[in-house]
Image (cartoon, rainbow, N blue to C red; front, top):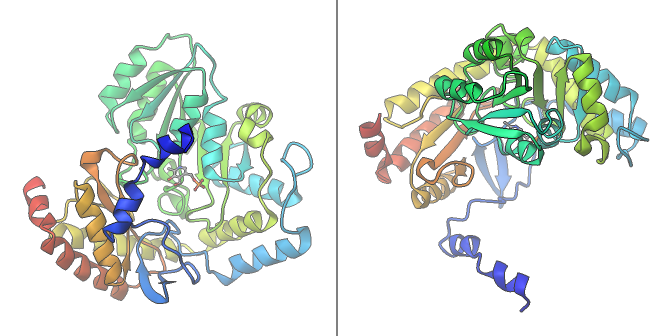
Length: 401
Ligand SMILES: Cc1ncc(COP(=O)(O)O)c(C=O)c1O
């Protein structure tokens, strides 16, 4: 065995989990992605999806993807910079910019690439990036690539953010980057206070709306719109892989910022552009989101019902206020065991363990879609309550609450 193989062969956590029958990853779905999916020939209820509006199966979204494939083909064979720009890319960029009230927008082939490519290129060596400790991994990877000074603040803690702002040289650029809705915890960033501090210290703000778009704000415009503060936020990031039922992402901002990013962002320049199908699907999903607000309303009816249900059963759900509901287990083994047991009972949920969260914060991530019915939700709540009670997690939660 050579050195690399020998070193890596010591990593055997997945093998151990498989041997114990609790390995919860890479479950193979054999059906379409909706509230019910087929895995190993068995139907299970899906409560682990990010398709909050349930549009991945919408006939108009599928038709748009098929029509674009027929017209433009399957792949772009090049970056936006060179041979990979289509008219539908430009149309979608204009639509997205208008949607979030910014002068311009640009689309990347994934949301991860957006954060990687934007956060890494905006600020210089003497500037600062201030980031929430629970920001998404793609934001963290973005500032790891940057030469700027990186200042972490405690999760949604505005005193901590202010202390970090006070450390910055007044004449240097200070970019605050946060998730609008935190992806694992479901809580909402304190945008009003961030805006106030940004004004006080002459800082700029970038908000990742991956989980805000389609859920919060007018017609799903996101967290900043929810607070009426879209104009105060310099950069709005969004992804197509959640409410917009596709793959890809965007950044929207002023003309000058987008012009700079377009010509400096390496993951944008040196990677092939979005496929025609993905672009057209996101565009169609955006239209549906705007024209069918009843979807968002149903999602919120389900969310309020679920939040009450989990609270009543004594489950620790933290500060969530969205369709992303963390069921805190705070124990790795129990998190895996409960996920496996729920799956056996026909419920798909996601285990979230380190490094996605701190080892003491392990949780089961339960998420809702606008296409869920109350019957499906009731079924899941009943099974979850029984399983968590049996595992002794609810008692613990009651003490913690
Ligand atoms: C907050 C946040 N930002 C960015 C991303 C990356 O998006 P994508 O899946 O489109 O690459 C995710 C995806 O999980 C996310 O949760």
